Length: 591
Image (tube, rainbow, N blue to C red; front, side, top):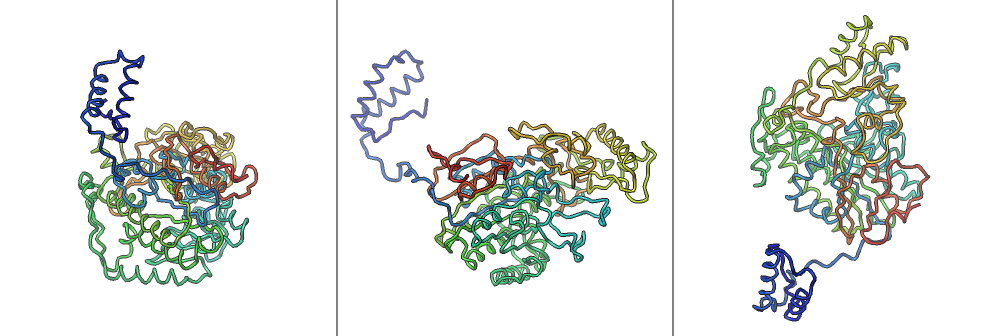
């Protein structure tokens, strides 16, 4: 009751009415603390403290007029790679730039990448298609096709391996594996004048958000931004490459850490090194140091801003879409974990970079709608987790690596092959059985593999491909899905493995850490990897926060409705989210 006070704008008349109403109230026999609080409030009236008129600064801000009913001229779809709901909750109190604006819009703090394969490519494939990986066909960053010419070499999610120039080590970048259209493609089908533009440090983010019909596509490779084979760099990209090239050549000093990063500024021993205190000083002529730093996001935003101007996005009498995937949070998370000074600095710089993006669009006078989410979350390095009340946190046992599991299966079954018996790229996810074997032998190997995996203390669940294929696609609240449901949402029978292994929530699937490069990761079926924020903002929209779970597959149908796109029944796995915080319903604009 300490906070009970009378609005000073009431004046003496308001105080008198308050006293009269209280005296006549049937609630007079109330507890002493409330009586005291009310007495103090009435005392303020008697003393005349309520006389002074409120200054304009003390009044609440005027209520926004409400989001325009007409479609925006530009959709800005931002993905922050590895930006978990946990990071968002941890740092939202410190945001003062781009995120401060987004927090005035529609805030869904408990969004879900609902599937089990919480990796970059599957996650990005859901954001603007409205479909789970089971329908997008993007089941992982890499998968295997043992019966194809690739054999035991991986197929990259964003490559066209049918191109003779493509290889596992140097793929020809393409969206050919994406089985469904993106929002940008739907927009271009409705209005061929629409421009579909995507930029990122990662080619797979560009392809999964942009799709097959893309007007401009740029990603980072070898210390510069590059584009699709056969396309020339635009002047905007050339200018950005020149500027970033000069920065790499000269180097740069450390980035100052905000005062609120002090508690995270603590060295932790990991493997043969330590993390937790790095400030991102850029050594001259070391482009990879720029990539694993907030400066990568800065360069991506700079290029996005240049492309907005060059292509007149949002200013040419049509609705365009700009997809911006910011990768530095993921690079920093992998290299240093999520709870050190490095991530704290990254969160502060990310906020500033988002602010620069929005400020540039404002200056251009563009009517734009922003949606921000993430492809997946992430888990901190187990060495620091052990220091911070999570002693169960461990690294994956080497016995779960594919070669070691293959030895155990051969010992159990007596089956062996000339090439690898089991094909996988780590201790979890999809496992493929060699096609040197016939169907009966493969089934025997799968049964043995599942028995060995399920008996291992670091394994949470293991399923056969046949079992998942016969499981209905999940529906309902994603936080209530079983592990099998989550695995099913990532399962494509034409691409997924003969078995799928899910590790325990406390296990980091990196047996040997490399500080500064790869010590922590994501990819689990648990909520620290599945939960991501989803934020929408448009000028004058009435903000609200909805804590109930939603899904990233809800983004595309939401935007399609606001744009008034006509889509076929069943186009999306997701549902439209009503962003109109009044009696109206923004989902009624589509159909």
